[in-house]
Length: 371
Image 1 (tube, rainbow, N blue to C red):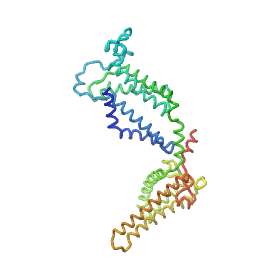
Image 2 (tube, one colour; image 1 turned 180 degrees about the vertical axis):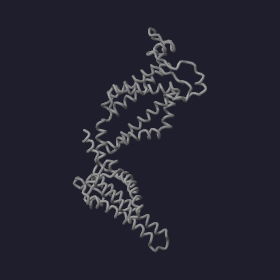
Image 3 (tube, one colour; image 1 turned 90 degrees about the horizontal axis):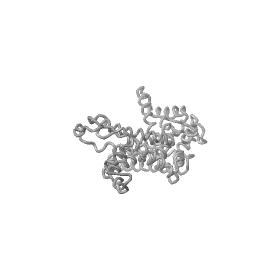
């Protein structure tokens, strides 16, 4: 018992970051599908990745000394099904007709190993049914394949690291692991009523994805500015005047309008620019929207530059005025973002309201098209 607990403790201690990296593709997929990631969905995906790491560690650890493995001469495989009962009688003196042998057999290390093999893939059945919505046949096949992967890992000597298998390839382990996965599938059906409704999780994700949040806009802008910088670099080769403003308006004004109000960053994060009534954005409105934004940005930084040019007795005073101005701008930005969030999807920043445009999530459109 202490061995299994120790391995799980080591996995939980050393692999949270690895689990997070493994979880990232799941979260990106769900973000692309729903436009958001709820905490419960994150918890399920992350715990699933961490569970797989723990299961893998339980199979391969502890790693024996290479020279000790090279000296092994025993069998590497056991291909006779249900040998567990024969070995149980031999290892624990279990006799079916003698009740006094039942308790020692049940509490023996040999039996506990069988129980842990059964429990190893029990969570897999839960995740496949509840989180991934798979059927019993798929769960059984997936449990068998994962168990076979574990057994082949041992049989191959950790993929050739050892000169031979350092643990026994046992067909009973395959059967036991597969039954454990199917048992987890069945128990999940009994627990369905007390578990959070799976459809409701998706509905909450869609509802959350309908809001074009400030972090979502910032991430899209970060992606878009990368492509704006590439276009700016290309225009700079020809020494065009005002290369950056031109690149900015070409990308956000013309290219984005031609793509239905979706820049590359907006397409990635699933929202677009539309007219205030929700119709496809007009070219002049789209150009006005981003011309105003560019004008506001230049005006804001221009005021900061003017503060630095004031004939003050100390440069620290000028730096202080610039810092106050930047802080005030940040506060105003966050305040309007908070007002937009509370007002709903119809309200946008000032440059959006002046141009008669706003942002609209495209998550539900794709969901409806896929039905």
